[in-house]
Amino acid sequence: MDTNQLNVGVALGGVAPEHEVSIISALQATAALDRDRYTPVPLYIAKDGTWYSGKPLLNVDRYADLDALLDEAFRVALRPTPHGRIELIEQRESGALGRLMRPPRRIPVDVMLLGLHGGAGEDGGLQGLCETFNVPYTSTGVFGSALGMDKVMSKRICEQAGIPVVEFVSFREDQWAYDEEEGLDQCEEEIGYPMVVKPARCGSSIGIARADTRGQLDAAIEDAFRYDSKVIVERAVEEMREINCSVLGDAHEATPSVLEEPKPSDEDEVLTFQDKYMRDEGDGGGAKGGGAKSAESAPEGMASLDRVVPAPLPDDRTEHIQELALRIFHLFECAGVVRIDFMIDESRQPSGQLYFNEINTIPGSFSFYLWEPSGVPFDELVDRLVQIARRRHREHNGRVRTYDVNLLSEKSLQGLKAGGGDEG
Ligand SMILES: Nc1ncnc2c1ncn2[C@@H]1O[C@H](COP(=O)(O)OP(=O)(O)O)[C@@H](O)[C@H]1O
Ligand SMILES: [Mg+2]
Image (cartoon, rainbow, N blue to C red; front, top):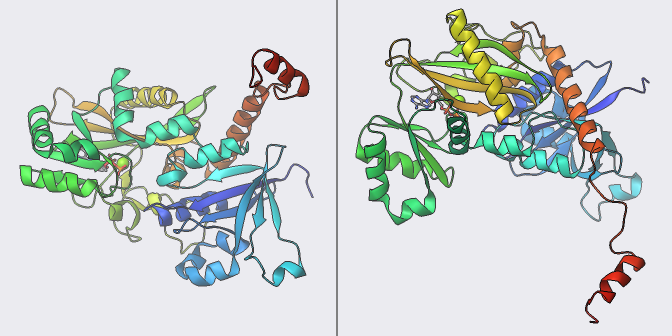
């Protein structure tokens, strides 16, 4: 066997509404992994938070019957090692007879490919676990992931950097419960109808609603609090075009992709969860993202949305958006592949006002459908993600992280005691 062969732990599923979407994204990327160099090792996070591994988890068709699939998979726990890799250790029920028959399976993992959308998989939680276990991982770090997940904080960061964002206010649940009427007044005074209400840290349009009256606004905010303890209320942009740009790279070098203009099924509505992920094959034109080597029957996830690629915009506007996307990538200290979403308010003349809307630090389908027309095929994209993860890990490990002096050694403690410790 090639000694340079790397085991790539593919994290998929997750405790988030986008569980199934994550399975699609992660298995699309797995299908694009060069098997001569990389061996995929699934790490499936079930909806109840338990972790599994096992080959059948790499087959998207098997997820239709989850009980049968999990019967063939096995529970695992993560174990750090001193060498910058982790091990997946098979977990057995204590007292199981199987324990006597063979030792638990141990699978080394050299780099984690994070294919989770939403929740702890995207908000820095899992990134923090990888940092703590000192294993390379393919996404933006803890800081940028947490910031990027938060629609309020990410808008503030961009605003502060002089990048326009639509007018917004935000509420925490405790504030809201304290004075609802005052909150509604504030929205009406500072924004005005129509408004869009969103949970601050969700995705896939979950919990998002439009409000045209005070009654609707109140109901929409209450509903959004079912998903998150923080809510953002924005001016609804009525004559809107949405334009997205992916960026690939890290602090050293980063490249913007061609732009996409996604199209909702109903021109008047926001893009829904259904629009994004549940379009049927042949349900309209647009540049569907074929090309993935995943099973033919597999759903296409984010790649199934109707979109125009490249977005029909004048060259100077395209370049301006790409430059902004690069700036935002660096503001959030991103790494790997991200997608930055903009809105154009066409009612603001002369040529429409551009706003930053949100950043997705683990974009649906890893945005491969934007990279193919940008000259980066999916296998190369995944390869770059792995190489960026390893480079960041090497750099991080090259810095001073511990001191060799043991402050708790006999000699040091004597010094402490002499200096008036508990004997003093
Ligand atoms: N201020 C707004 N005005 C009008 N439509 C909006 C506004 N904000 C979001 N939308 C619509 O709602 C969709 C989802 O909102 P977005 O902020 O992208 O959240 P998510 O993380 O759920 O994708 C957008 O794609 C867009 O169609
Ligand atoms: Mg969005």
